[in-house]
Length: 155
Image 1 (cartoon, helix red, strand yellow):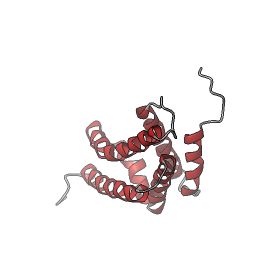
Image 2 (cartoon, one colour):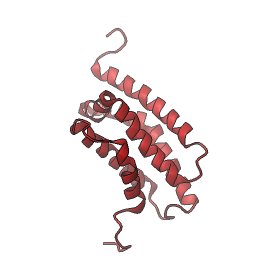
Image 3 (cartoon, rainbow, N blue to C red):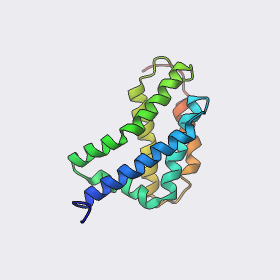
Image 4 (cartoon, rainbow, N blue to C red):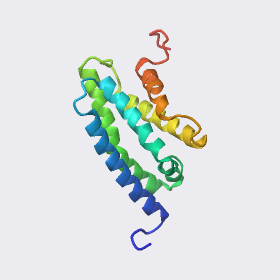
């Protein structure tokens, strides 16, 4: 309590520090990669790798921070902005290079990508880390890039 007002303040500070380090590291990993598809894979894999190496951090990010009040959730969302902007940049690059559809709704795609990654980690945490989270990166990536493999029909 010398440095933090309460538990939530401590959690936010921890999350801010870890997320800043994560985004910086991720930028280094994807820098110079030719395709947006590869960059998206590296984003997913690194997200899973960092949390699988630190299961306690995974519990904090997936469970503890979710139980906070609206004001603290707003702070969390503010901290996530750099990560979400990086996703947007990857998606925009993919559109420009013809890897992703010209009509792709970047905001919706980002929500789906982040939601998929987030739910995959939450399920892993809730199952007491019983399986290889990083091993799921290629499957998650494949599903995000290729969809469910159906036709092009719109319902």
